[in-house]
Length: 285
Ligand code: GLN
Image (cartoon, rainbow, N blue to C red; front, side, top):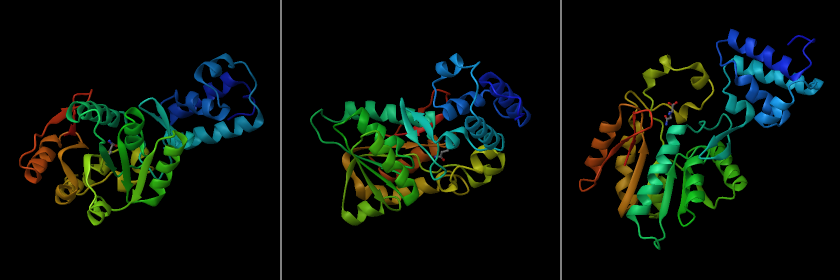
């Protein structure tokens, strides 16, 4: 950034042309400067003619360059919004997506119609990452008893910090898929998961913003992307109470195949594929 840039609006103009050169969204500079100055959007726009301090100037330049080189904004600013709350994220966890808010929304509605109001409903979120699903479920419906697992302890650290910051009473357990519960003989009324589901081969076509920064253990799942669903089918029957509800996020085009797997594991089950607001098959219940 040129040393003649000293005002907020000059810094924003510099960022916008710099980011454009790298093919990034030119408006990302606003979010990054809001973060550096710890200001809301309206505060930032009220300060356009103010001078930037030397420190702010340096921090902003660094953030803009990181994003130009492909670092997702959420990892730079260290958070993402999910269901109206702020979740801390780092490169150990997938950045929560709006599609996953739809999984939470539909599940909450289904729980209401499936279980009596006074029943203690036990929910588990498998592969919780940042904890977004588990923590949101607990905060939206406090009567739920929520457990969350992840195979990776660095992810669980992020999830625990989020639960603490948002004051959500969620129990965290480290483990591979459902192993800890099978060993303990524990059962659940509701199981939710947004497992890795991207076919390995799709990596080539994906944005490097995703593939170079988000954890591959949270994204890729074998030749057809269905590895984790297949593993779930072996373990699910021993941990689900009946009646019970299973809700999976799936990749676009996988809905029917995951539904088939569920019918194979639970022959009596009522299985439905549901679509996200973009019209893509995104959830299987
Ligand atoms: N929805 C994520 C993406 O498209 C993938 C998440 C997942 O594999 N569970 O990047």
